[in-house]
Length: 301
Image (cartoon, rainbow, N blue to C red; front, side, top):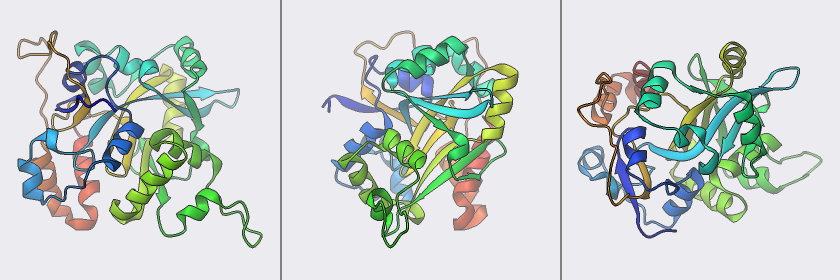
């Protein structure tokens, strides 16, 4: 791992543009880096007053270099999600101020079928049938698949048959975990850590509702979305790219040029800060705190 990696706080555009091309970390790289970093337990007040560069992705949302491409496949128009590496992430490759504000307004970055085929042809791209995932509707457009990290998750990874019962994790779910968090020992180490630190001992992966994907692709074509991670929660369906308290990790560019400034011709956005969102979510109680905060953020997506 490059020792010059730094944490840059900011919305997706400003954070990404401050990093040298090709250095923004993927989710599996962030997880592996975290496993080699001593844990830092922080109170809420300490979290608010700690410089972003001293925090890890478990403390607040971190943009990832993983591309999330939604499309449909075959005569049945099966809703699909392809997750790419940085080099084939067309959203990042084309990210500028105009695209940034377009995504905030429209929620996605549309592309041609040719781009879809080129992306799928890349050896490090993996495609997933969204209808094969055990999804729980979270918002009208979004859904979450949950992976239990209780004591028997090792069996779900490894065992082919015990007592006549197949205990292995479903193939699509397993591939999705491997694509996001790493394979082999990397995946096992990540799940070991998350089993201890994750809320409710679950890994949560947020994607778009398959029915919504099918509807949008049919009317407007395939599209890209941004991705991020916070603790054991990975999202492949980010629309709120303007969140300034998020971060990205990579190598800082020596001379920062072409950055968005106050002279922008685009309108200033109202941003919900981390402190504001979590303070307001206190009214929802502990159990509903995260859902309330994320619902609040959705208003500004």
